[in-house]
Amino acid sequence: MAQNIIDPELLELIRRTLQAGWISVYCDIAGDYKEYTVPLADDKLLILSRALVVSDATETIYDYTLNIAGQDIAQTFISSKNKMPSENDQVILSLFTQCAREIITQEMRALFHSHRDKKHSS
Image 1 (cartoon, helix red, strand yellow):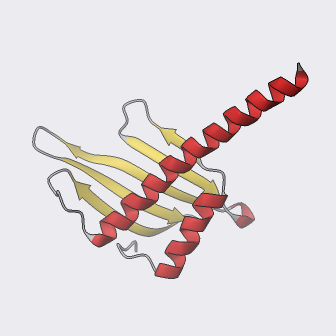
Image 2 (cartoon, rainbow, N blue to C red; image 1 turned 45 degrees about the vertical axis):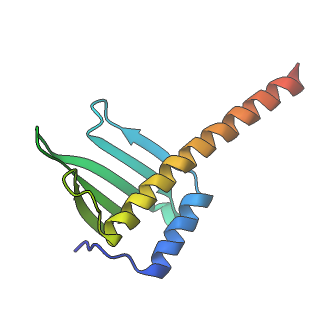
């Protein structure tokens, strides 16, 4: 079963994988579901997902899940009412933040290389 605590060695491996790998992102049109996917060895995937569970006038709750090769490694539910996320929740949130930053970095590299290629072909 999924747990909230990620082994420190596994966490470091995940962070390095996010930094070195190519991250794909999917977000549904309503923004209720977001998924970051990184290919691993042996056609396996590292998937970080965020799914809306509850949204009403008083509270919004998201389900954050970390999945490796089809197996949930960590899962937590984070409420908008909770202003101080637990240390474990902060770890999960930091992985999502890292994914977002890596996506921006990938886009900037692609833009740079596209611009550089256009200069050389002119």
